[in-house]
Picture 1 (cartoon, rainbow, N blue to C red):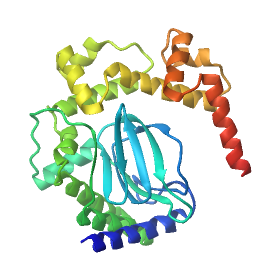
Picture 2 (tube, rainbow, N blue to C red):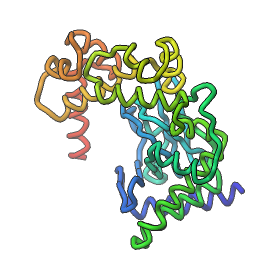
Picture 3 (cartoon, rainbow, N blue to C red):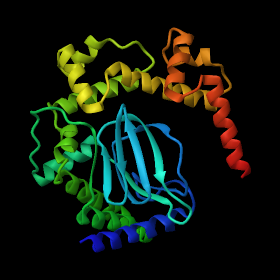
Length: 305
């Protein structure tokens, strides 16, 4: 079985190499399918991880959610079932053996469709599960992933077969050891489903003050239940979640626009520029001005390399 998995991983790596060829993040002709190739170890990068499946066929990736560390390589896959602010880095990669990842984005409605069509039972009761997990890769998942990637060689087949193969992949995950964790995001009435609604509210209004009572009302929970279940799903509180969204977007604005930190602080919802600077330094390791200067210098060095 191990030999079969190794053969499949090599096949998927060949397809990723064919449709990438050099380092980068590549969209494909198949909606929601992406290939990632990196030939060196990287620094931690702050991102919002969308609901997605990541299968690594070469190298090793490390993702940190709050204070939890998820490490996965060719023997594993990672799933995130809601939007989560995380830091991620390629922990093992080289020019000879670059990091290669097959990534599929999905939505709760797609999960619900698979659950309904397969008559898979996912209870709406029970404790909310963490919305990120790493599991051992299975032959059936790799088989379906390869068939999906091979469609790039026959583009005319994509509209008909890509949705079927993607559905198969999601079905296999739902049948796996963490299937309940994935399925609960799609089941109306589950704690995870309600926390997903709260996350959407925070995302849409991240630059506005949070009223926990309003979020609890959206989730149809008491304030104490909201805090408990939100932490079960995201590993952080609603305030911490919002803070990460604010600071990530502040960094993006500072990198892309000519503006100062105080203006950006107000734009992302801070009332105090000094508080913004303190929290920015805590998250990124340097005050805003120094951090942006360092990032721009590193970008110029890569361009000139």
